[in-house]
Length: 333
Image 1 (cartoon, rainbow, N blue to C red):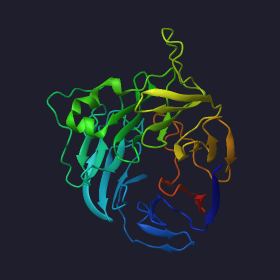
Image 2: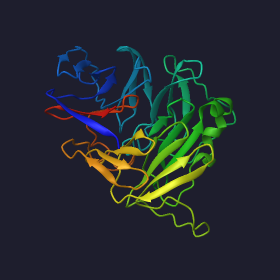
Image 3: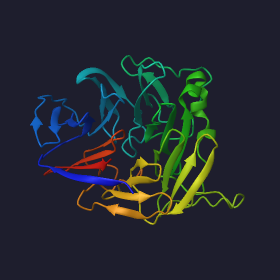
């Protein structure tokens, strides 16, 4: 079973957190740098807007500051301003800003987001904004994209968004496929078939995804396919290459944000971190002293209640900021 080391840093007032090596950067709080030894170095930067969230590129050279339930963001490179980005105003105050940073196969930094319409997912070069998914054959997909995540090897893009009426839905796209045929981004065939709405998801590896259907999830009740899974109140694993559900087990708690620890375990962050075994649904360890908010999905009414937090997917480290300190959970090798 994975084991975690718990550390409390006596650093107060962090407004955002992002990992850079073995340090944490508070871009929104002035680009301050926090060391794991409790040190603090002021960055003396102010951006003058109500940004409340940060996403970083795989190499940490680039960061985007944005408003989770707003329309505005800015791109930074090593702390220097590059450009502004926007998304549609349509219901922007009701669901999380869709955004992911990743590297293209040729190494160029890219961004996936919805710069013009909530139903039009685009891939652009991060620095210039050059759009790589423009096509005369594209149409608007009947989906509100959110929760964008890239697989570890950068080949697959996942959207944990929602469809009207509303209900959560998860879609997956091959990056090379959509760059070759951008119209694939508009197809509902990319949406995973499921018995229940799926509120959160994370890549376990390049071919497997862990997904959570909350206990109160809507049950679509497809009587024509009684074997369809997952059901409400489950944690499931989906294999991309075979388009099959490999497992689905009961999980009676709301999962919240998910982060993959290994092939068999995830951290579920609703209210506080929980280490969950995917094969049994058992919570094998809890950290109730670390408040991680009540986020339960991209359209959850508690969507604003997300504290500053940062997940280091490579080193399996979680940092969470509170008014008085920063909590750090680190996987013990």
